[in-house]
Image 1 (cartoon, rainbow, N blue to C red):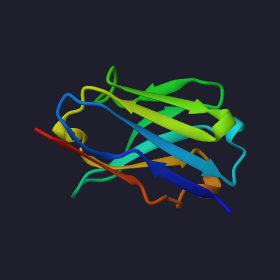
Image 2: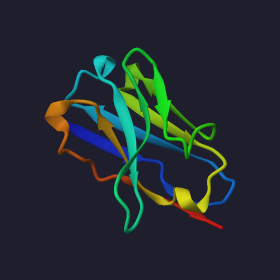
Image 3: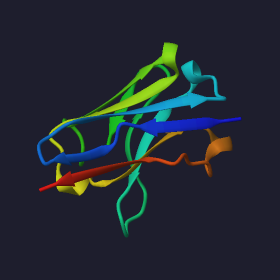
Length: 116
């Protein structure tokens, strides 16, 4: 049974930082590429960052240079370090394994709110 537990969200002022964590179980984490998505109110869910199991990273243009994705295979956890946060980063953030069989599966997410 797959479980994704996102945490680390909160309320922060513009310019601040947060680190999101996502603990995954039920998958072979060390050979699974992982993504972070976000969904702001009234907007479609969008891909923010991804990391392959071999360590290649990719970022949305809107977060490039501010966000960093990383993994800890020993803890089956993927992180998203978010710096220089902007009000437009406000959203619910979700992690997701890059697996076709889980394309419709989403965890509960973690809320990030950035005040101006």
